[in-house]
Length: 370
Image 1 (cartoon, rainbow, N blue to C red):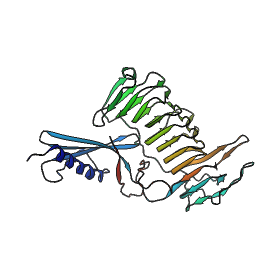
Image 2 (cartoon, rainbow, N blue to C red):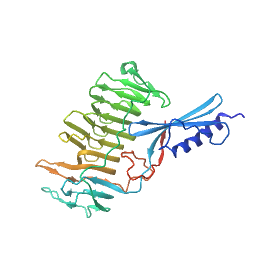
Image 3 (cartoon, rainbow, N blue to C red):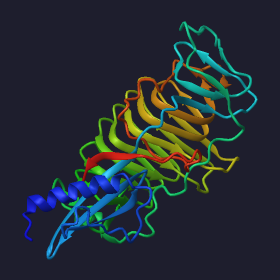
């Protein structure tokens, strides 16, 4: 039997959908002849930051075709907008603040607040149901941004020419680029690439970055930057004004020895994906600052405090909220901030933040071909 490349490709498309439905259970030995026609297909799922890569391969005699796609988890219909741990303090809403969706909040509830000349101005604080939260946040998975089991190769950033596009396939080894300089400028990088720095890294707006990961203690994006980037840092990530991190992007600050950890999104910046600041060191300061006119689409998780003046279209998990004015500091206050799960698009594919506690089978879909 002979097959054209079109038929082999069609067979691999079918195999991709088959393995996508079984993404939770793919093992090393997963070969299958889907149509009993001699074409053998197999798949591999590997992590890529917050997300996962599905690699599907089909073989017939000496011919092979391979596809890679980025996949994400379909939303479960829980309508959850906010999980605020029960720290024995009520949540106060000031100005135009509003929550659209269901909430888990402290026993003391949610109330209208008043700060100097700022009273509550909306007609409703909450559009959704209320439940009582626990004293701790749901426990995160521990598999984000793991590279230990992946095949890698390394080069120096200085080996790359400016303004020439470099693409690394997800079917190949992960390419680590060592950045010695503290600035990244005029680079065009796409695909299975990790830019790594042992120092602070300032990413200029003249870079073109697509589906890459940036790993450094501190990362700052210049005002006006646009790209699809996932960031893993130890101390600080800043999006200056008018930065857009397109879907699927993300920011992750994890455990470390520093006493202060912060993610700061400045005026009119935007991120589509997920933001996680997770450190169980109780003595460390942990803050996510979401300034006015900022929009985040997806989940935000913080084991410390969130200063929310902008909008989160999705779900927020936090230990507390934080508001600083010229006059004072307020715990568990939101002024003008919006949390809106109701307007998160149904087809938005989320990050699998937690272990599957409720035992419902996770379902995945394709975010984008790679």
